[in-house]
Length: 232
Image (tube, rainbow, N blue to C red; front, side):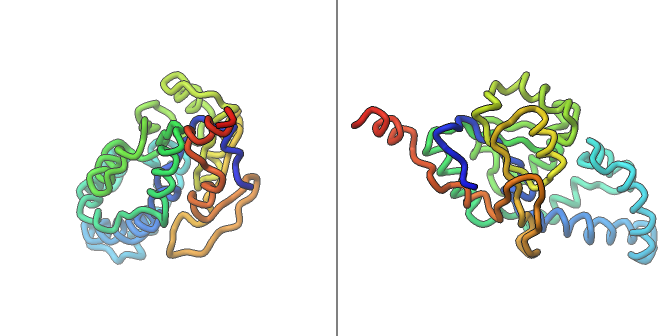
């Protein structure tokens, strides 16, 4: 299940649940937001959750699902301010940064491809320095389609030149991986444990790993690969 790194030039990675612990987002949307929504309307939290659920279901899988401006309007809350207040809970998944450093040392192009809203990305970047780990960063909001949509991938390809046959992509979302597969990306892996507080999940359709670092086996610096190929 380990990728053939000699066949891979570009590595594209999701952010939340792949590199960053999804526990922050799970807690934020399941606990933090309902609590503030309830307080703003003087409702019990259970009743607030019931009112919020139809709004969530109507947007699941769409760009609005990931848009903090949309949720600020829909819930009459300052979602960005709430995220900044809770930013101390944002963290890397185990050994994720080590994996990114290994990719850069190995000479691969490393690209972040996220559904996170640019303001959400800015909050997480300010806290963890996410952007400096990548050669390029793309938010689906800048391209006008969520990653689950097959329309997203041609738009990404128009901005980021990559050979689908020599590209590896990792995500914790199977619908996103299916869209990437339809675009022709050859190397696809699913994250089984996006929230480190939760157990590993069973993943169908794609090879899965608990951590991106499990993919690092066989990843050698390009300079070493060149020397070996030349018989040095």
